[in-house]
Image (cartoon, rainbow, N blue to C red):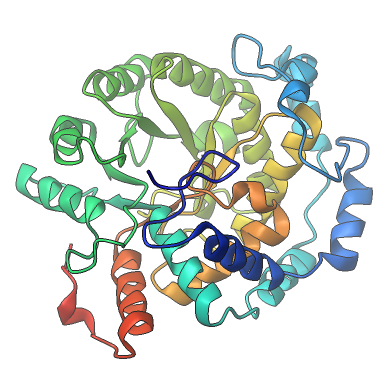
Length: 381
């Protein structure tokens, strides 16, 4: 029987518990402390949230009322005007400070065994994705096989977190990963534009869930959000969450590249969490600007503060534009430094990517053999 960690997750194959704990500690150690910027942010946010020194206990976790909003913030969504006042009452984002903070964390480096642990962790967080009009059952089966055994020559390689496909491919993907623990995620709600009537969006979701989707990635109505129709966006997320039932987790995609400002990204993050999102996600990968360290840092701050206020933990998924192992490690440092160790798990943090996995595999092979195999030694998705 494989050893089990205190949080209930198994130690990765081929690794003793002592070695796992040692490498996890080394990953944590590169982050240091948040310093003055964190303190100034906490003071600015004090009127909205209480910053905890430790994670809330399960007993302290605030329940969500029907409709998705945690009971602690139920009055915020009582009407369109109260929701608007809350969202526009959030502190403005210090653009220079946010980008400087993200850049400084990107300079941290991880070496030797800690790097090996970080690469395995990143592999386990990948949502291996194909979202093309030319997708075929054969392509989805091949992607599923790769998710289950990313490196067929080394069975100690972790599986990816999930395979992400269109709703009509969910049944094929589900069959391809059966028995592996790999989740099947499906984009829905008229992805990627989100320009459809609500009943069409909900039918999209129900079709995917009925086919066996474990996770739903929905897109918000950016037009409604940018027009200030926050309650419309809130109500749609609540309706989609209800359509997911109890069997599928909901990821809410903001398309940060279209929201224009960091203030809007912060507002969208809180709006999504108030409506019941299990994850908040940066982007569809279909626009010019997708996940960046700065917008991901901002969303990590939001989930951290949301849990401090409500006791409800929400995941984060940066998607699009993360292509190298070096990039992935930078994002892991962001997670640990900003939200904390509780988010260093694929239940709470994901990478929406496809090409990233290949680079992670090549770097993993180099660490194991001392030789860089090159792109010809991994499959092309």
